[in-house]
Image (tube, rainbow, N blue to C red; front, side, top):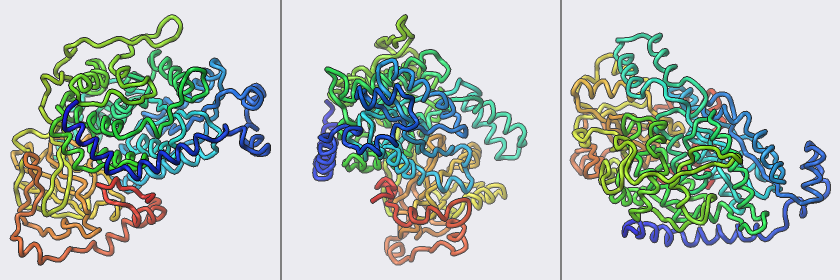
Length: 609
């Protein structure tokens, strides 16, 4: 095993010992209870089964058959989640075939960041994660289930479902994906049209045509953003049926994998003879969390997970921080190039070996913990095979991958990686701590030093771009975008204009206490700056024209201002009128309590503590 991997895991375990011990003790207490239907009063049982068919009532009450709960994030707003419409029926039929029963325990909200990007609704996006976690808890609090199946894919939905499930850590749990849409227009071609539109060289009709060719059918968007990073991390954590992340929604193999998820949930429920229970709170231990961190770094995944997985770990009684990510990044090689970290989409990634190839390489290189529990086995090795077909009995047929890459422009071996270090970098300095997705940035742009131009809204920055005010070397600073200020929206709409400026030869970078989408591109962006400006962070000390250094090589984020002058400066306050806009309209009032109570980005932007 890699020395740094072991050292990081050991210090996480030591740091978390008290919190984790208390968490496991609570799980043990819940595991020692009678089954739900046996400890409930008769009226409670009657309510629980009232709407079920008579045969299911008989199985539950008289035969004491295993009972599965489904929590679904189905809606028609998310292309990735639309296929879930038919999943309850598929799951119920398979459970019946296997002698078990199923109830949809509840639904959770699921918003599409692609729809709300750059709009006020995006200010609810980050907090939707904890809302989903609470909704998951409401669904599972009926407390009659032997295991759970969680249906979710996209940005905040998977972390929210996982956080909610970990608060029911005694319950065995399987995540059920639905797969990506087919490949449409290439992501690079889509980005070019966006840049042309930003320059006024094409109109809205051509932009809409391009976007519609990219996002064209049911399934997950095909770039390697937060949603698809979710799927990679769930594979690395052993919470999926092995290899199920990136199979197309309408492939027969997808249906077989969904059936297998039902059988897997039963196998780990503790209700099948000869099969041990695998509560999710025991599966997700320190090694499991480190495996997720490594998988993120090895694939150049979404920066959002430096927030979300801190929160996920905390839900399991485990404390991680950005230094842990940074230290792992120094030894984890970059093994995949998927857009925006390359030209391939996730379908090409899957065809080249996908998560199975990456996990195998990391395990063989001693860069992942193999001896962990997983829903697919007693270690992580089953996740190194790829589902290829459906057997005559309806079973999933899996194959081992070849030793060498199928397409080395998409995946590489650990012995010959794209880069010797991971795709994410921690920045630190007198402006605070931030992260940068360095794998997507050209090497000659890994260090940017230029005077800054400061904005407090996306709209103001876009207006300045259109007016030609940014045609120079510049570090664009967009502050008062943190969790306390306005819910920490993603600022993905700033990418096209910044890319235009970079394409003209200017040396540009973005610095913000907001988030940037997992689809953020080739422009260097120091994001998630903590502490945020509204919480007294030094980003509020900056003044227009200060020279700012963003260096992904040495991990520096600093204002090059005389130290005495910097210490004497007062923080700028957010204008009352702008604060009022952040607090009202389109549901923002309902999230005021979350904005007040939220922890910093590095602490996972957690709202429940």
